[in-house]
Image (tube, rainbow, N blue to C red; front, top):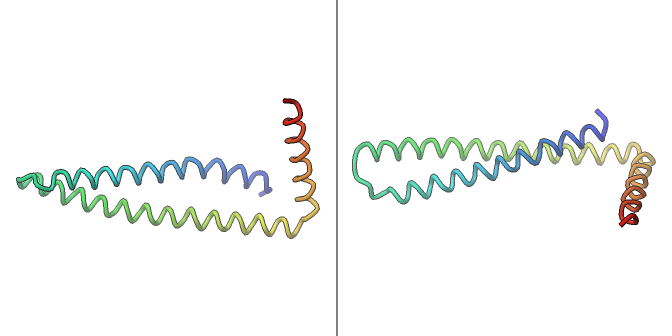
Length: 111
């Protein structure tokens, strides 16, 4: 896999994944707040519902931690792969960086 393909693949996956992780954190926080707010509600049905929600929240938290760990490991591996590529092909990396710099400079100069 080329560096360009690897980079675009990681970028396209990372943003939605981070958004999903943040959304899940918000859902868990909202559910915990709801549990605290209804803690003084009496009744067998309410108690059973709270117990099920608490169990579900615990499972979601565990999955969230596992997913976060996997994302961190993949990010670290991508950084290691990039570092290895630059060390193996320093002139290619310099050429790519120089081309990118020229393009960015031309775009800035047009304004």
